[in-house]
Image (cartoon, rainbow, N blue to C red):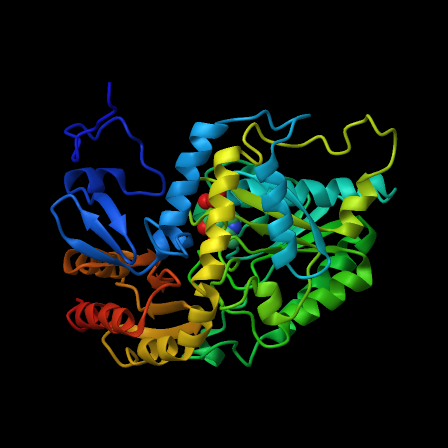
Length: 442
Ligand SMILES: Cc1ncc(COP(=O)(O)O)c(C=O)c1O
């Protein structure tokens, strides 16, 4: 019997939707029923331009033939293979492909199923790495205010978004936070990296002085913070963090779940900024968002530290039932091939200036208090309505959706991150709709 579902379900109550105003949504649902290239199709038959690559993940656009064919073929050939003590070719091929596109020291890949799991994995690898080297006192972790590292306990502990933390108890112990890097008074309307704020990295020295560097395992930051509202690293900031971590033997983890796979016009933000961390977390664009998958990239120095002891002994007690799942691996390989063959990272790099000019042309519209950008990412910060924070940006989101554009909002910040296949006409369409909405926003 063919599997079929109605295009619009008549009962919305059972699905408890993630990060969604459930009651508001269910009164007036917004449903996508198909997608192709740069556009979604709604249940009422309208095209909606994807201004956010889904959730920062569909970097190659939608319904890409190589990816959908690879998934179908793999499902009919080898649907699943056990991830522990067994292998299948595609996971090894994908790991090698990732190694080949990553900066040189990153020779090894640990597969997960999401960005959140990549973060947990990287934090655990960092802790275990110090322990296997006989530096087991290094147990403390350092994150950053406003950081987003997914929603699992490690990630929300090192993360710095208050609503993602405050409902969930005492979290991990032994965590400190660096200050965030958003300095609106000094850096408003900056194009690319802001001039001011490198000194904020010096706070790491304060934390080291407080706890002793020998007790600190790792610092985790997004090289460019996405989900919190697009916060750029000030010039020199990442370099300083790197230097202080190296000085004290602390590992530096870059959470590249958003910045990986071409978002800044390069393979990884690590390449873009020329600052080398010790571990890189990825997900999202790895499979174009089509099948859940994440990966942690590790240097040989970290990986090799585990490769001692008897050969038949498991070296790292960590992994997931779906680590390197065959269908996800096939999707990953086809996604990387699509990026390469279509020159999508190059397209992102070549359109970055056009994107920047179009974005900054919204300066001066009502309620706009800051605009910032990098690669194919943009943010427009609005002043909040007194007593009703987030409402103004959410109204913009609803109006854009009605007019055929998907944007994303966090607080009163509008975040934009279109698929990397976008062209100039679509950039004009995007900012035409958004500009019109902002002009009329209450
Ligand atoms: C930097 C960063 N890390 C981790 C995550 C979590 O990823 P996921 O939602 O796949 O668990 C996200 C998601 O937006 C992210 O932006």
